[in-house]
Structures are given as C-alpha cells and as structure tokens.
Amino acid sequence: MSLWDDPEATDDAGLHADEQGGLDRAPVCPACGVTALPGELAHVVDTTFVCDNAECDSYGEVIA
Image (cartoon, rainbow, N blue to C red; front, top):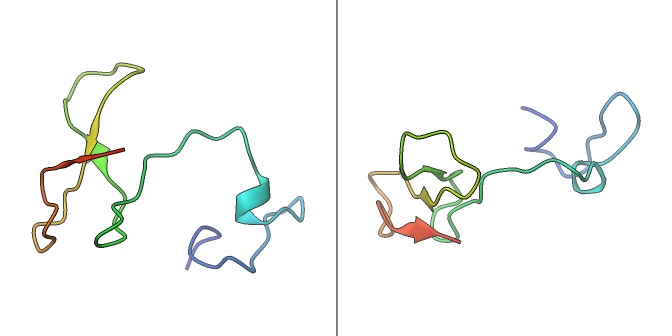
C-alpha cells in the first residue's frame, strides 16, 4: 500500500496525501477508480487522459 492508497497515512514530512499539493497527478476514472493514462504517446503538457481499464464501462473514454 502506498501513501496514496491510505488517506490516513502521512509522508516523511507528516503531510497527508491531500495536503501535499503542487503535484500534478493523472485523473482517476470515476467509474472504476483506476488512474487514467495519457491518450496520446506524446510528451505534452495538455494531453488528454483516458481510462485504460478494459473491464470498465468507460474504457477508452476521456477522463476530465
């Protein structure tokens, strides 16, 4: 389990996951809870993210 899996866990500085701020993270699919992956393989700042869980109803759809 990682810090991001346990909302009560803290990092070495004593910060909860939601207090660490400043970290841009990929969005999580609201239907299945899996972290979305970039829709394109290019390294760009404004990429779209899609659900990559083949068992999800939102598979391949853009996650905002």
